[in-house]
Amino acid sequence: MTHERVLVTGGAGLIAGHCILQLLEQGYRVRTTVRSLTRESEVRAVLAEAGMVDGDNLSFVAADLTDDAGWSDAVDGCDYVLHVASPVRFGKTKNEDEIISPARDGALRVLRAARDAGVRRVVLTSAFHAVGFGHGHVDHLFTEDDWSPLHGPGVDAYGRSKILAERAAWEFMADQGGTMELATMLPVAVMGPALSKNVSGANHLIQQILAGRMPGYPNVWVPIVDVRDVAAAHILAMTSPAAAGERFLLASGPVVAMKEIGAILRGHFGDAAEKVPTRRIPNIVIRLAAHFNDEARSAAADLDYVKKISNDKARRVLGWEPRPASEAVIAAAESLIAKSHSTS
Ligand code: NAP
Image (cartoon, rainbow, N blue to C red; front, side):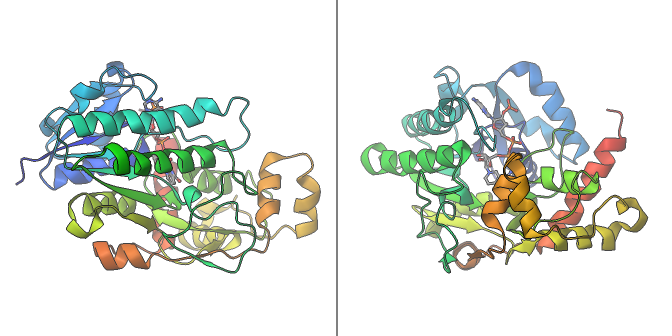
């Protein structure tokens, strides 16, 4: 039993929720932030349904990434901070600053407050968007040494928010971090057990496929990681001495063809996956649809490109052992089906 205290920012989110569950399980005292304390009971209920242990060791503080209020209370007495919260919104945005400012300035607020409170280490949730986007179809094995260009092809406002926030965090550490340490996490598309009815990040893709909202599959490949493994990596990076000052790419393994995701779902769920499409959509159709449709436009940019991504560093330095992508896909689907049937 440890008495160390960890702040996890954004407790209503998917990755943060799994971090909280695992930290409590390991005996940590956990504090989390929500934008308004009116959400505390809802978040507690969601975590309880997911099997939370020692809920008495979890407390809540109100703090918004766009405001200084609350952050010094949030970090007070904490040994570690997992800064997970950040706006997750893909595609075109009228005012990019609505995403970039909470991501970058919010990360700086958290780092400043953490340093002033004597926090030992912050683990920041960045994203593969800060590594392997905007490079075109290069034949390259992406590692933690790579950074996405801010304005490369396929880099949207969300991608820029992740690049700018992570860069700002490393710059802060170099100039003003003092003795505090930082590690950053770079997950690819996160799938796995949904905690609430809100569908986060890449679980959307599974929802679309399950519901038959896609007529077929473009010839694109998806990098996948299970949310339970993402949470485990955050906790390993929090305490592993060798993780200080390092970035970690989190991927289950090689990218998975979108058609293969459909095959995994059909293979596992049988009749319950009857709406899951079976056919591939020819490239020419995707390219034509790209003139009218945002999703087709983003798929068109990645047609036929099999990205190579290394998870070697996280395995080697953190001793991280991710599940196969198929388990993330199946767990995501199981939870989405269960949540769609539940009345709460
Ligand atoms: P999520 O469920 O949408 O969680 C996002 C969290 O950020 C929510 O708790 C949200 O709070 C909070 N947030 C957003 N704007 C905020 C603000 N202005 N002030 C305070 N909190 C704010 O998504 P997630 O997948 O768990 O994402 C968590 C982190 O992982 C993010 O940093 C994301 O960039 C990163 N990531 C996600 C993926 C993925 O595929 N899901 C992949 C790579 C990296 P509310 O509930 O109040 O909105």
